[in-house]
Amino acid sequence: MRIIVIGGGPAGMFSSGLLAQEGHTVTLIEKNEKLGKKLYITGKGRCNVTNDSDRENLINNIVSNPKFAIGALSKFSPRDTMSFIESMGCPLKVERGNRVFPVSDKSSDIIKCFEKFIKQAGVSIHLEETVLSIKKENDLFHVSTQKADYDSDIVVIATGGVSYPTTGSTGDGYKWAREFGHSIVDVRPGLIGLQVDGVEGLAGLTLKNVQVSAIVNGKEEEFEFGEMLFTHHGVSGPVILSLSSKINKYYVNKKFNRSISISIDLKPALDHDTLDARFIKDLGMKSNMDIKNILTDYMPKSLIPIYLKQAKIGENIKGNAITKAQREALINTIKNMKFNVKNMDNIEQAIITSGGVNVKDINPKDMQSKLVPGLYFIGEVLDIDALTGGFNIQLALSTAFALAKSLE
Image 1 (cartoon, rainbow, N blue to C red):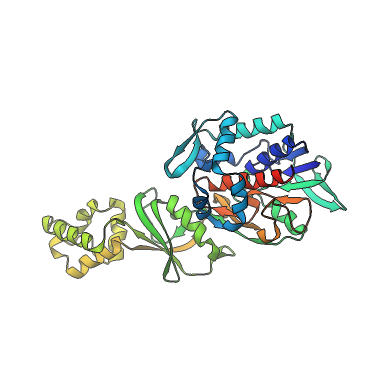
Image 2 (cartoon, helix red, strand yellow; image 1 turned 180 degrees about the vertical axis):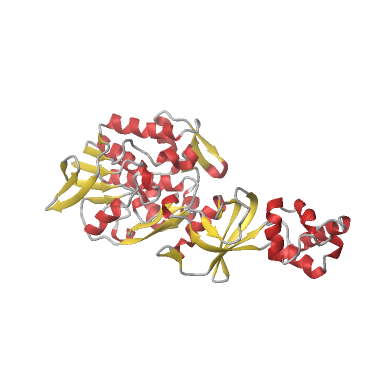
């Protein structure tokens, strides 16, 4: 069969190579000047290509429509991804959190693997070519670009989402999906920083081993443990990125439709009584010191003014002047520093796009449209997304594999 794959990211490259191996005539069309452009920047340029974990952990890390992805992940697992990449000449390593990277720490080496694969398979690669329209008449698809017109039996849309548009992710796949009758779940930023109030002077500060909770309409709804950092206008870092994908369901028309705040527990390993005993000891031993100086043993210096403001305690109060009520406020604030969330960062800066082609109209066994025979959607263009850690690239590869193997 003649097959056109639109989009040269991991899903598009992998599916085109697999399909060509099965003897199909495959044309891969990519608007950029090179393949895998978004892969170059993933994992801070190191390319966290998958996560070496079991299926249960994989599913637990998928935020949107995990049940839809179960079949594809069962057919092509993280170990399958690792075996494939190493078979193409790129050795891998597993780091903290089971995150898998190339030994070289170069995302370009991962891209070279896919390029080698599709070239060996005989895929016809068309770079710097933008698809303008896709039509279907009878059983034949007509694909037009600014350079040529193509006829094909099958069209695979692997165009990604709308994050990092400079890499080519500009939402083209959503337009074509709509034209063929598909509904699009509203796209939202996923794995992105949050804009919060009251962080002046904290830009660049990193907090490790903290627990951060998302408070929705006054009720704790999600929490993450690990590392976060402050930016010029808010917060980011691993725990914040994960929380953002869990609360973006409340993000509609570029604003939250709920009251959202975050609560930071600076000492999650210490309970109230342990902290109280520590404060009593320190306040007694350093009775003539200002509280702002005593607190340097508890938190970074730059955080102390904001912390004391939230605790409603003056910076220059001496240790021997702290009352029991003030000590209680110190403990409560250490366990619950709150910041009001105003907004999310711009979706163009998001690591992943949440939302996309509604999976209710897609067959999870082969990624084929239930509405248009011969039309397939794979990867980030679908309404599936996961937390950080290599899970999203794995979803792209697993959905690509499910499609290709269905056409053996």
